[in-house]
Length: 80
Image (cartoon, rainbow, N blue to C red; front, side):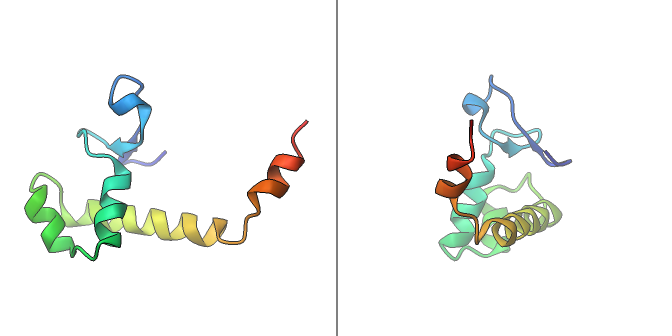
């Protein structure tokens, strides 16, 4: 994954989390989607730092740009 994301089947069923925490990466994306500012997120989760949030946003933005035009049905149809 990355230096700040880990997945462990023993923690939250293996969902990607911020390394060293039990905070799901998806939660940070959800909060951003709800228009939370980075400052508001850090108030809720003071043990995180700004660089972690910014890195997660970059990872999410890059993934979105790479997947925006992906047709999942087409990919599945190529499976053997």
